[in-house]
Amino acid sequence: MSAGFATGAVRGSPARMTDSPGAVILDVDGTLVDTNYHHALAWYRAFRRYDVTVPVWHVHRVIGMGGDQLVAAVAGDDVEARHGDDIRAAWVEGADAMLDEISALPGAHALLEAIRDAGFTLVMASSGKPHHVERYAELIEAGDLPAAWVSSGDVEQTKPAPDLMAVAMERVGATAAVAIGDSVWDCRAAQRLGIPSVAVRTGGFADEELREAGATAIYSSVEELTADVTSLKPQERSG
Image (cartoon, rainbow, N blue to C red):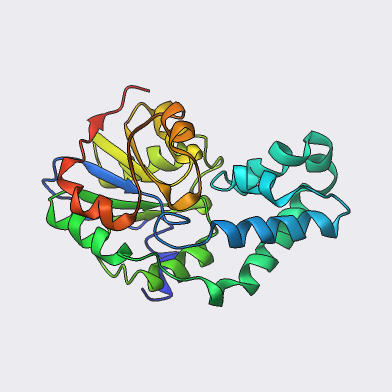
């Protein structure tokens, strides 16, 4: 994907309209690209820069939550008030430094093709920074397969708030959707919006956690999901 991604698809360009049976809202970080542990380390280092030590395992438990909510979630409201914006800036710096280490998960591009070929309208939705998502789009060779993209730059609140998914549906005019992600935060956001969610274990969350968060199906890999993509059942939102 070209540099136009950040100023075009993410920033509100018109999406292609189809006769799709519904939209598939597909997460990127941790679902299609292997980023979760990189992000956990980047956040850990960002907190340490401001003399806040949060165990890496604890940070991992909130990966998938948007940075606008993550600082308070793991370190408390006082740290958010005193250092929140600085810690987020430090995280971006740390994550930027590791971008060249990121790789697509096996089968990521094939999943996009399978969703398109099954007749669904594909919308990519990520809590990540637009320039990170642009890089991930290149890694998975997304091209013009998605009808639209949504990132943290498009909403005031990220996951587990349902805003990203709501905007994703609005952008393609979808009345029914199903979300695919790798974390409990994806599932909770979908649940709040009132649409079903499907989880992939690539984020490092346990099946029980994902089910409790609302996942209706769990797959061990992107490739396993691709083989079963026609079973996806978009539903009209009830939230």
